[in-house]
Amino acid sequence: MQLAHNPITKILFEKLKSNGIPNLQNLMFKKDRIKHFEFKLGDLTIDLTRQLLDEEIKDDLVKLAKASNIKQKIMDMFSRKKINTSENRSVDHFSLRNPNRFQTKEWIKLKNFANKILDKKEINHIVNIGIGGSDLGPFMVTEALKSYSTGIKISYVSNLDPSQISDLLENCDPKKTIFIISSKSFATTETMKNAQLAKQWLLKSGRSFENSMIAVTASVSKAMEWGINEKNIFAFSENIGGRYSLWSSVGLPILLSIGESNFKDFLNGAHEMDKHFMTADINHNIPVILALVRIWNRNFLNSYSHCIVPYSHRLAKLPSWAQQLEMESNGKSVDIKGNKILMPTSPLVWGEVGTNAQHSFFQFLHQGIEKIPLDILISRKIINTKVLDDYESNYNNLVINAIAQAEALAIGSSDNIDTNKNFSGGRPSTIISWEKSNPYSIGMILALYENITISCGFIWNINSFDQWGVQLGKELISKIESNNEHEELSPSAIKFLG
Ligand code: F6P
Image (tube, rainbow, N blue to C red; front, side, top):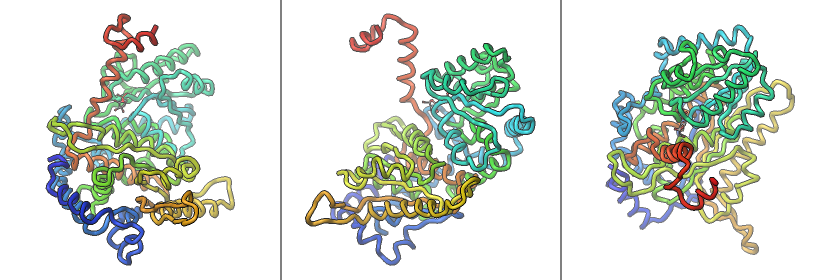
């Protein structure tokens, strides 16, 4: 059932029409607000007190989720039913965060390889060549967990523009560098062209590429055809979607970057979130509740975008990762049966690290015409740094900035003399906070974001696991490359291509 056909949707719209949008300035000061709008799992705290919701709306939203049959859909996913119907596949990335994985041949091959590289210390630089899900997730986590680094350098190449790989290779020693060609399909143009350039560079410097290039893929035969030795191929299942794949062998750069024990903690944190997602009642189910808040803002309050601001330099890449996750998963216009979707799905997800974002787009958030819902992420305590002494006060100031922005957006301020200084307030935000950034907490947060996206998809009744939209562009590129006639192109495109 689509959201437009859900009986609770009509009820919510009717109440919204008669009661209007709740007054956040009043609601957030209510005595028992925290009791009803704060959720906890382990040391993760989700503060929804600054969302445009009262208890009645929250209860109706929970009914909306229940009416969408979300519990059954979650169970179907965890029991590996083929819920990715357009590709006739189950959705298996959860199994990679289950401790049972540590007994599999796939895991043993992966960790033995990583441990050997780390123990021998002959290699000091790992270059991951991949794009989209084969880049954003590992890149973000490597940065997020830099404090846990094994010391090996990890770099990422994604762009088709050769200047990216060229700049990087200037600082690589061919004898001490390994390239990971990471591609589920082993056919993505950007990745294959960059891999070719890396191969040429290795050969030019007298290295055999067999020992310096490995593949991470679901298309083992294609990697072998390309020339990668089978022992250097780390396979993962077709049932792991690209944007959900950082937990698979696509996470090899993460494993190398933080080592086996930390990587296991990272998976365990994510597994903790999955257990909660699978078993918690909808009233307390954090991913489902956050999905409902996203849907409330998107579909009922017409917020077309959703902004994510991590107050953590190490999480600077999280907005880009979350953008692919949500927009590639839920940017859909047909439902799971192929019928036209009647209400909008994915919001436009964007963001930037705080406090930097405060000095670029926060003006728009505070005084722009639209009210843009915001996720503010912050770890309550700093991780120790190696070279600085008096840095605590800087960190405390960062925490104060995060909370002050949420308060200012919600409360606003009025100036009767100068309207330039009027701040309407009533602008919603969620604060997601945790004790300290470590592999476990970061694993939990990423699984939370994935499970929010999946829950939204379940409530909208769309397939969050395919991405047919990306195909059209890809097909046109190869048509143009292989055909000089270009009859199907517009006059402007033909002129441009010469
Ligand atoms: O851009 C579309 C996409 O298909 C993503 O879904 C995927 O993460 C990315 O391309 C890379 O694909 P692959 O891992 O097959 O190279």
